[in-house]
Amino acid sequence: MSRTTSECEDGMISKDQTELPLGEEGSYDECTNGVVLKKGPWTSAEDAILIEYVKKHGEGNWNSVQKHSGLLRCGKSCRLRWANHLRPNLKKGAFTQEEEQLIIELHAKMGNKWARMAAHLPGRTDNEIKNYWNTRIKRRQRAGLPLYPPEVCLQASQGSQQCLDINGIDSGNKGQHDVLQTHNYGIPDVMFDNLKTNQSILPYVPELPDISASSVLMKGLCSSQHGSFMSPTMHRQKRLRETTTLQSSFSGGMKNDFHVFDQFQDGDKAAQYFGLSFPFDPDSVAKNPEIFGENQGSHTLANGNFSASKPTSEAVKLELPSLQYAETDLGGWGASCSSSPLIESVDTFIQSPPTGTVESNFPSPRNSGLLDALLYEARTLSSAKNRSSDKSSNSSTITPGDDAACSVLNFSETEWEDYGDTISPLGHPATSLFRECTPISASGSSLDESPPTETLTEYNMKSEPVDHTWTPDREKESYTHLNITRPDALLDSDWLEHDSGYGKDQVIMTEAIAALLGDDLSSEYKQMDLSSEYKQMDLSSEYKQMDAGASTGHGWGPGSCSWNNMPAVCQMSEFP
DNA sequence: AAACTACGCAACCGCGGCTTA
DNA sequence: TTAAGCCGCGGTTGCGTAGTT
Image 1 (cartoon, chains in turn brown, red, orange):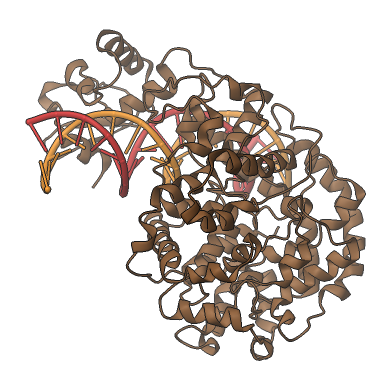
Image 2: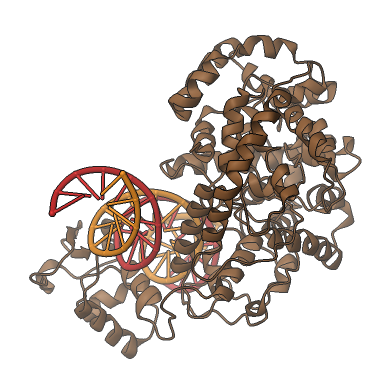
């Protein structure tokens, strides 16, 4: 059903009631009742009509615009045009530096809540912000830069804890919150809001659909636009389906497998259980934006009190009539309840990277720091290549066994050792996090294992973010976790074994990756002897247990992974 | 100079929430 | 209580333009 048709259902003027503007651009769609509506770019004449109408009748009641003004536009189109271009006090032109910073911070907190973000940017529209952000994502993704400046990440992680303290959490569910929040794994307010909202619901989720931890992870690790580096071509409904599934799964996991949380003495393990063993290195985060949800799509870093720039305190009442959330207090986000689906929370949770470095130089107004970053990157890459080649021997070493289950992670660890085991601001050695592999990322599937070092190295270098204030040390560290961004690094052997047995899936996976990664990498994947690696994997009992739960449809194990997720991964990976 | 590519913006589309009858 | 309509949001697409080859 086309948009025009649906709008026509609301009752539009018939064709004989109006005249088609002659010589005007745009297409015309006739809907069921004969109304012909125009699509495409607006003309100044149309703008004038709409402005005049709004002057007389005010905003709202958009469907009546066409009826009363003769404008051959549907209500939606009128509202959009008004909100984005015609309404008074609209700010035109490039975003200021302050605005850009605010957007970044807001996005870190809210995710892709463009309208809500717009509420804090007077004169700016949600669409404008959205476009800006998407552009920014693309730029930074191309540049291998972190989506969020370390400064924001740090603020986010600091703020989240404050928020936790301030908001307080129902003791009965504290465990959940602790798991999700205590360690600042980039959980946005939305997540906590939803948890609160769903606290009474979670325990009653009847079943766990076939969601897959992998899909969660994929989304978390690879989302792109909107945080999500998800393939833009991915059909929305498909994503919705996944989202729904994920939501259910997560919720169900809360219920059916919540004992899992009991296993965790702290949030780290819980996070790991969810495949969230962030190697909390600001650099790695920064350099693996894909991993940590630089995207996004949801992609909030953390809830909490940002040391938001001035505009934060200047949050104004929404101007856009379209805005539904009249938030005027950024500081209140953490306490506010969002109607956002839980899935978003999960999504964000996983994607949100904690980071702990402070960025000294904020992006310049128009280039968002990208130009500088790119220049810097160009400079550092040359040296990085030399260094990374030396590192390659280490990175290719895989130790069988439980620890080896994290083959990829071991790779990272190896490099971590080289560069020192960076302690995250949260106090978690990155390597420790890696050591305790998640059921998803830990088992060391073929895809889990380190791809050919050469490839990794290349990718590492190319994806190295050089956000603003990289020191030589940071630069070195930048090569540590990038392999995690590889889809293979995120997959789990159990994951593959599910249902059809890994042998078959292995082939599928290999082919899928080959197809998705392109010639350069596919050949490398195909050459890998995946089976041997699988056989070497000795998952920890804990993970096996979890996987069992997943296999029975209860949750978060790697069980029901769908290859539908792969495009997102590969899209994300985007090896230059 | 032409072709190609990337980028940015405006607009469209589908879905979900809210309101109302 | 529920169904229909309206509105708004977020995601996606299409197109014009600038930059590159």
